[in-house]
Image 1 (cartoon, helix red, strand yellow):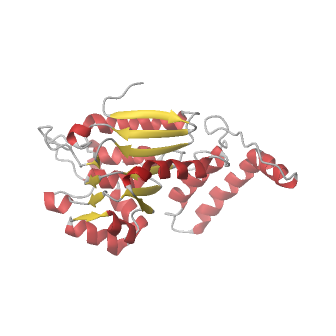
Image 2: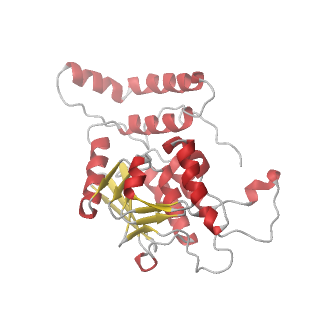
Image 3: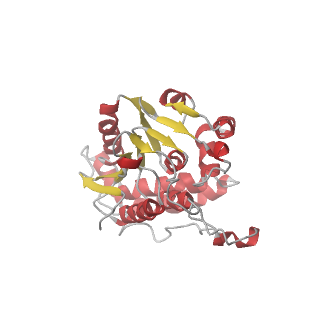
Length: 286
């Protein structure tokens, strides 16, 4: 499968997914949105992929929506006038990309190599960890464009940085540097530009080299799904079923390897060996 706005490169269990429109600072287009959804769905099923690193080609990560595309640059049908009961008629493209990441059972690491503003910032929120180059710049610039934040960022951003910090960045719409992103909790670490991608790949290997693919997939979905439950009983039910079934698979090998003082061979497959109860949640209707 080929892409026109991305590079999809798998090496040693890690997919490096590169936004590849450097001539326009990797500006986000409707084609890029479609290709990102395809790539994340593909990676979810790709047994060669254990983790995903997302970065940008050239000097930018993503300079936001491509505002030169003409018409409604957000890809919305201006002839519609939907009310709250007709929301399914209107889907922001960034949100569709974020949901593809949310549904992915593989760890996703953002390697933010340069400017990431608008959708270039909000698309990173559905990634599990963000690392930044010293040259990275971020901006939730929606209020200055007269629009609102998208890409499910109202759900992700306060969970990552807290409500007050989220509102501060969204209210001001100002551009801020990697140091402020680190202080505000948006990124895990900041690196010199030439160290960013190697550090992201190193972190990806830390997550996957000696772990169970099924365990990682279930852990990722459990935290995202169950941390939003109104009562811990929901988490208890999901964890109980997941513990039961993993204890019959890789769990047996893990325990035996510990007792025998050897490295485990954790061979369960996300494609073939997820519990029969997976997925245990029901997707809400739009």
